[in-house]
Length: 132
Image (cartoon, rainbow, N blue to C red; front, side):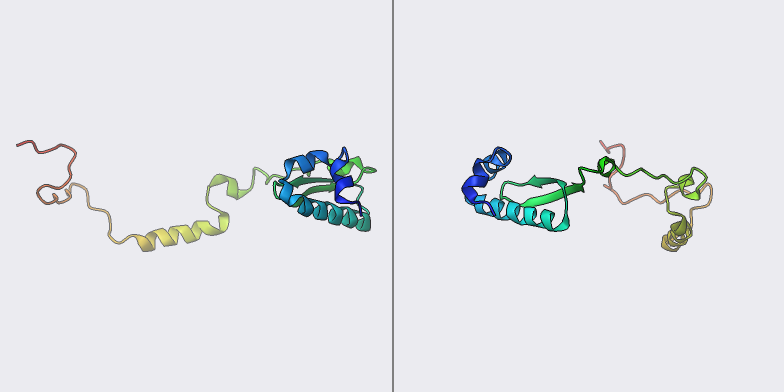
């Protein structure tokens, strides 16, 4: 395990220590040493990681220098265009549930043709103000 001074002056890790607050250098040192030991134990040859201002290390992606295909992104898979879920923005299993729920929440039936809604009380909000 390297000392804090040796790790801080290393050209590979100097920018990490410059990014982290001085009081958090021991945390960064501990995380880097722990991560190095884990990579050695698991035989990981390459890794992509991030460091925050408090010295916390987060592994983004693990790879292998001997296998370049390890760094390629996963192939995206799409549903076929013949799938019924493309025809509606509701999931297939919920289409029937949504129709039943909508009918259950309807309290009144629509007004028959020609019927006018009753007027509100005097002074109610209207689209045209009463200026009399």
